Image 1 (cartoon, rainbow, N blue to C red):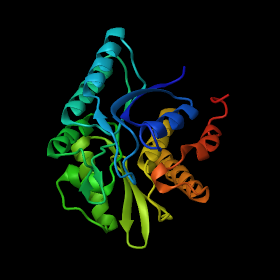
Image 2 (image 1 turned 60 degrees about the horizontal axis):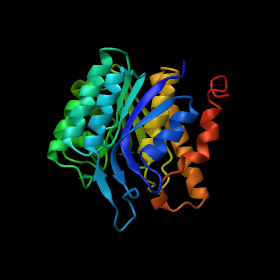
Image 3 (image 1 turned 120 degrees about the vertical axis):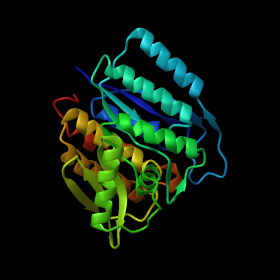
Image 4 (image 1 turned 180 degrees about the vertical axis):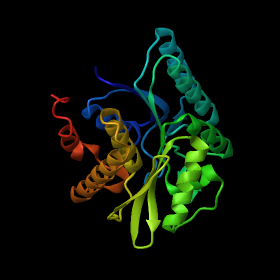
Length: 280
C-alpha cells in the first residue's frame, strides 16, 4: 500500500517553501501527501518587501474534525510552521488521536526562528507550545536557533563537538525523540548532528554560501521520506544532507534568485531513482 502522510505547514502562493517544497518531494518518493495549511501567504517572506499573511486556525480545526469524523488514519505526520500556540495544541490532539487508531511516524520541525531571532509571527507562547509539541515527536529537526529556544539557552554562532553533543542529548531528554540539529557551525565547517538515543554522529558538508528559503523544508521532507521507506535513521540523515546540498548547488547553477527558494524540481528525478520498484 502507498504510505499516507499528513503535512501540516504553511502555503506560499509564490516562490518555494513549506508545502510547495514538501508536496513534490514526498510525492516523488511514493508517499501520498495530504496538505493541511496552517497559514496562507502571498509569497514566502524572505526577500519580499511586503506580503499577505493569514493564519488558518479555523480551517485547520475544521479539517481535522472532518478527518476524525471519517475515521482517516495516517502512516506519518509531518508538522512544520505553526502560526500560533492554538495550532500547536490542535496538532498535539491530532497526533494523540491518530496514535489511538494507527502507528504514525511523527516528525516535528520546530519552526520558530533562525539566525538568532524568532520569526515574525512567533512569540513566547509559541515557543512554550512547541516545547510541548516536540514531546509527541519521533524525530525533531531544529536548527541551532530553535535548539537554543527549546532548551532556554543563549544563541551561539560556534560550537564544539562536545557542546553540540550535549545539546542533542538534552533535546532528546526534552522530547524523547531522535534528534537532528541542522546547520551547526564548527569554525571552518558546518555539519548536521544526529542522535538516535545512544549514538551521536556528525555529518559535515561543504557549505554553499547562499541562503535559499525552503532548504530546511526540503531536508526534513527527504529525511521523512527515507525513514518511511527504509527506517534507517543515520543513513536517512546522511542522504538527506547529500540531496539537499545537491538541490542547493543546482539551484545556484541554474541562476535561481534566492528569494524564489530552493528548487526541489532539480532533484526530483534523483529522488525517484532511489525507489525504482516503487515509483513506476
